[in-house]
Length: 377
Image 1 (tube, rainbow, N blue to C red):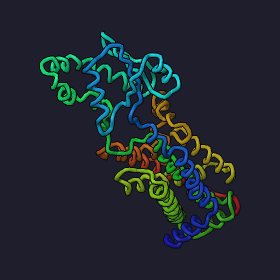
Image 2: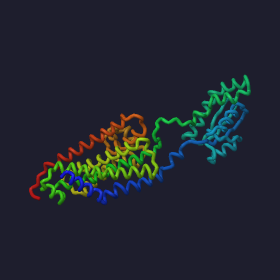
Image 3: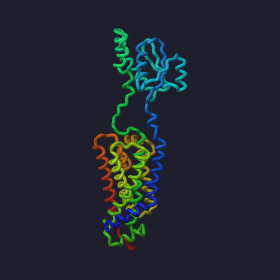
Image 4: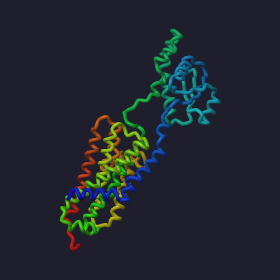
């Protein structure tokens, strides 16, 4: 009887138009829009060669040698245009350059239109490093002018400013969080499938519930089979959505994609168990309970960063407990842990948290449905 109930639940779940809409079509469409909106932003924000103007108020042979060495490198830090102060100011005002480097008798200074941003910071860092190393280069030049090029190359001015030193082997694109939260949303929307399990086991809420309550089938067996069937149907939806995001949209989830699938499937089970729990509370109708579940899911996803990217950090700063108990945040954090950390400690912590949530919701839902009695059916 268990396998009969399981097969029935799978058929009902995969034929459910609401399931197909919210768990398969909607994430595919939304994921495509995310790709269009965010797909190339991170790459466009990566700093390449920075256009600058150089205003030499005094001749500086060492500085000229440094700039020549930078220009001849494979990925030059600066594209320098030597000009006078007025022309440089005009170029800066037009936005043709990111900054001006002034060469004076007492050292280098810079001019920028705004101090915030990556490029002004790199120009400032270059000037700081040049000033600190200029003495060494000048000393080498005084001993033998032919040593200037060798000294500049040895000091590697500018090379370490623009070098990419990754903190992790994973994908550091900040916009990937939207796709993490999209999968988390797919998982939580599985609450709609868990809801109908509770409704169909309460005689006062549905005709099917009335029939199930007079059926000789053990109620625990029926509920467990239904929950497992819903989780399997939910797993199919999560796998399809994740595969579309990873292989069709080309989003890099890192080198541990099988564990990404596992996290998504567990997230779907979290959604099913949450729907079962809410559906078991009180005697409200299906529409009211579905509205509650959708609201809770969307608020959880919003607090996890589905709509506003940095809101999770804000929540973590002011109310960190919310991120620890918010199912959407826990699911998306499991993807972060796989992507950013080389070990599995934090990932296992998130998996255990999801398992605890599943057990609490499932046990709570069963306790509220198994002992109900009805005056008549």
